[in-house]
Image (cartoon, rainbow, N blue to C red):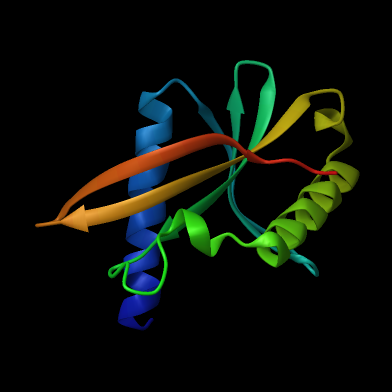
Length: 121
């Protein structure tokens, strides 16, 4: 596994812990289908939350939150629809799309959690 993928996996791991500390429950991690992948699927009370975790070592080109452009949002939305089709027990839940931007300094992560970062139109 290359170092970029490893750093991303670490960021996802710590983001998961961060969200659990905020009261969310993990449903799925790295759910994939032909449309793409959702990093984390979590439950916030009765709301199913599709979470995109973004880590950037450098913000020279774009902040982590800015990197979730409209095309990326559309792939996440399509993947969320596929998840709901395959897992009908979740279809009655409200859903939302969050982005967690991870930054690290001296082996310590900090997070910027944007709830309702975008909507399925």
